[in-house]
Amino acid sequence: MPILMIVLLFGVMYFMMIRPQQRKRREAEQMQRSIGAGDEVVTIGGLYGTVTGVDDETVMLEVAPGVQTRYARPAIARVIKPVERVETVQDEVEVKE
Image (cartoon, rainbow, N blue to C red; front, side, top):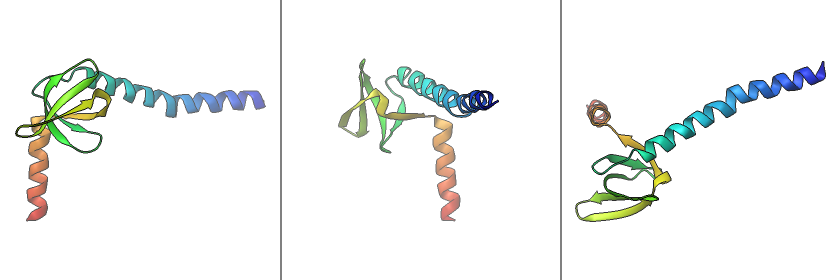
C-alpha cells in the first residue's frame, strides 16, 4: 500500500507540474525559432524593440531609431501582435480617464 501511494504521488506531480512546464518550454522555443525581421518583441528584461536581423544564436533589435542591440534568442519573452498593442493602448487610455 505505501508503494502505491508513492507511485500515485509521482504520477500526480508529473501531470500537474512537470508536463505543463515542458509544454510551455516547447512553445517558447518554437516562438523563438519563428522570430523574423520586422517582428516587434519584448525581452525578458521588459525592453520593447523591432527585430532587424536574426542569426542562429542572436537577434538584433532596434530599440530606438538608429539604436540596435544584440540579444540571445532565449532572451526574447514574446512577440507582440498588432491587436495586443491596440488593446494595451486602449487600457492605458481608460485608466487615465
